[in-house]
Image 1 (cartoon, rainbow, N blue to C red):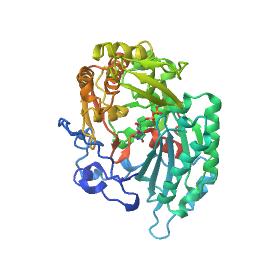
Image 2 (image 1 turned 120 degrees about the horizontal axis):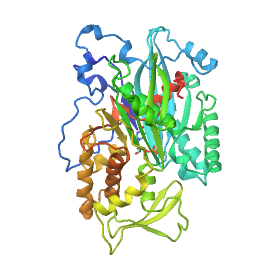
Image 3 (image 1 turned 180 degrees about the horizontal axis):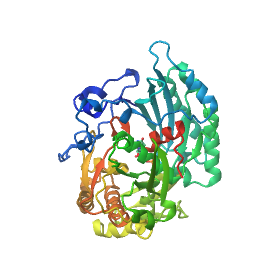
Image 4 (image 1 turned 45 degrees about the vertical axis):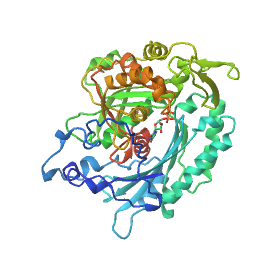
Length: 481
Ligand SMILES: O=c1ccn([C@@H]2O[C@H](COP(=O)(O)OP(=O)(O)O)[C@@H](O)[C@H]2O)c(=O)[nH]1
């Protein structure tokens, strides 16, 4: 369980008060971010403040001390239901007139379920609320692992709700909305199995003391997932308020699906994209038109199985799926989406980067669209499994994140694949994963070797995930279409 205190202060002050985010309000759930430090990590140049990648947008004058620009989140005025509106209106604290409210967002992913509890402060009824902090906790496996036992799926959510009860003060329970959105794991399940799980989760929500809005449990579509992650990252990096209209793109590599989202600078990117890859929405009186797509089956774990030819195959009880991306003597059972697969290296065959690249290419070539503009100079934030694999392979420091070039993934993939025994202890899949990431970035999206990716698990102490964007969308409909 991590408790991240997260109080926004304007850039001018932030740069001077490095301890501003270290205060911990709830020590009983305190657990600093898991420090996954790698002993052999080469020291890469760090980004000084992950949340602030473009120092030139800092306003060095005190006038920039305007509470609005970056402390806001979309105002919760048009609350979704009159019921909530009433509840929030009644929340004023008699003591200091500032009122606190919470939003609980569950991310039901293919490899795990996570709870995000956001605390907002409405300092003044006229001003926009401030995101104060996030409480985050994750459990494994994801809901799809319980495809034949929906009751257990419900139990995993019940377990996370206990944390919500500890975090949100009892007086606020009744007006705190609880929402769950499922991603690739449930998208990949047969409809009836996914439905049974969602019904079970609805029952668990109904018995909870929190506010359960209509449609609080659903499978989110891929385009929304990409857009909402883009909103989160651009909010946390301060790009939604700068006058420059400069924003950052996002690359999210989940277990089941992968998303790419950015704000195109060139009209040609929009015109040459399949129409479903363009999403519009409104935020802070701006209308944005984004390039976004979610590739189902191209998340890291789904791609491993697809590379092995195992995804969707029959005869799982007796078939062994092999790959030259795996150490020759490796043999194991792998669970994903409620199924178990026997996988192994090729004991008397060849293994290594080149052969592996051919194998992973099958999962990418002809499936991934190259946006017209991606070779340009946009900054991309990459997180989830991009981040995890970069840490595991020693490309970046796990406690800080950092910047890498696409060619760094390629270089490390070659090293790992050509010395598989050395890296086996870290993960037998490391060669396959790094080769897949390299291939996805280069052959798939068409990034150049020199494209810089900012790798971050969290920005300014908040998880880089679609969950914060989805909470904004709940409080104030972004009208994504
Ligand atoms: O707030 C979050 C949400 C996800 N993740 C990580 O991102 C990856 C996303 O995988 P997921 O199973 O959600 O993928 P999906 O089902 O969306 O394809 C996993 O390693 C998670 O641990 C994270 O670090 N913080």
